[in-house]
Amino acid sequence: MNSGAEAVETALKAARKWAYQVKGVPSDRAEVIACEGNFHGRTIAIISMSSETQYREGFGPMLGGFRLIPFADSKALEAAITPNTAAFIVEPIQGEGGIIVPPPGYLAECARVCKKHNVLLICDEIQTGLGRTGTLLACQHDGVIPDALTLGKALGGGLLPVSMFLARREVMNVFSPGDHGSTFGGNPLAAAVGLEALRILQEGELIENAKKTGEYFLTRLKEIKSPLIRDVRGKGLLIGIEIDTAQVSARHVCERMIAAGVLSKDTHESVIRFAPPLIITPPQIDRAVGIFKRVLSATRGELRNNRP
Ligand SMILES: Cc1ncc(COP(=O)(O)O)c(C=O)c1O
Image 1: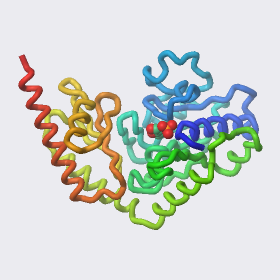
Image 2: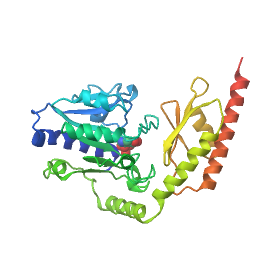
Image 3: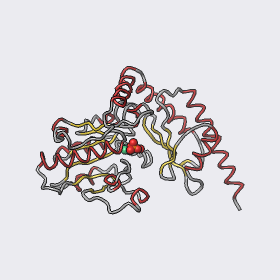
Image 4: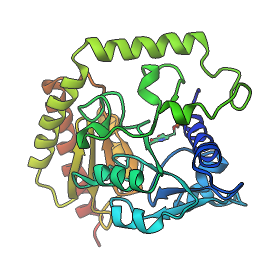
């Protein structure tokens, strides 16, 4: 497909049709479980399983057939499953939700629960996939092979919209010609770029670099002593710094960072996300950390001066 959201839409359609054709769920009763704080895109179906007011407000009525459970809680998953549950869709690390890294073993436990109840485990790796977290897929950290997977973003080498939905044959086979498609879905240019991006990932040392430099980046960030920082977390080159929003917003810090030459992105007011290119080097990380420290001190100065 083209956008990440379309890959997720494809996953939802596949899960529903699999539920009716293979699992034997009564017509139009299939349910999909998702996590609070998720981000899977912004289509009507996808916002219907979002817990974020901004994405939903003004776009109702929402679509039925979704249940939300807390993230990183496999017991909640088991409790939410009914005979009509088709799938559980989850990001191995919540990206837009604030770089929330679940405890080790969480995804493996979800995989066990899903298998036990004949529910598809769909990992949305649009943000975490293709080397970002130091492994090809983030689900590999937990040794999990999901039933289905969505990929996007890096698949287009940062240049071209291309996304995919992958699944076990039994799931993929529910689609007949004409069930699903898009004018530019799987177009030759996007396919060529996607294949090249995968080839570079396989042949180069990008994934290993993401692992090594990610650990280095995280260590350097954890060394920073600033009362504005509440937490530093992440995996590979997907890192979140939680800012004390009682003092300043993450956006304010990100804007100051842009002016100083470093691009980062705020999520949820409170988290600064660093997701640099996988080719980043330790000296470049040192430079970014230096700029970040200077921005934090300057922000502290501003806050002191503005105090009554
Ligand atoms: C985990 C995840 N899923 C889906 C999407 C949606 O992708 P797109 O913006 O290409 O529609 C994103 C985008 O940030 C994402 O992070």
